[in-house]
Image (cartoon, rainbow, N blue to C red; front, side, top):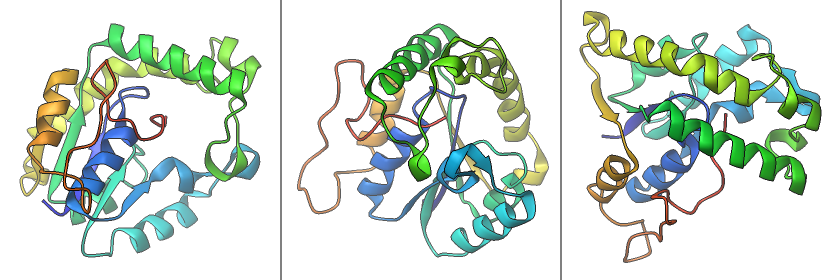
Length: 200
């Protein structure tokens, strides 16, 4: 396992898991949100996005997290493993609400200086609110990745479906210890590694 795509609905913990996995494998971690969301929440044009992602995944080893369908073919053609974090919707919603409120209250900077906004937090529009997005997309992602795992087009990929925090912890533990630490990373009470908050 040296080229890994980590997918799952917003709030499932993709970025935290990817960061920890990359540390344990001692390979780079790329967060697709950080490439797509330019300053002021400006979206990178698709052609530029694809060009940048193609450059990133041309490396020999990496962990990439994100669900963008516009570049999935580029990532998955190069990947050897897809880690699919498929947690229950109730748990995802609990985490996405807690995380979003914390980001708004603390004015935490995300990618390229962007911050979550109060008006987006309260919006019911999935294109504006990551909370609404997580609610509406949860089932769609479950179907999307379940179908992909059975698709002969992706037969070269090993799909690892993780359905609970315990399965996530066990999967990470099976990858050994963090490079250069001589021991495993500390974990939070709910079972997630301590590196920064997961991204959309």
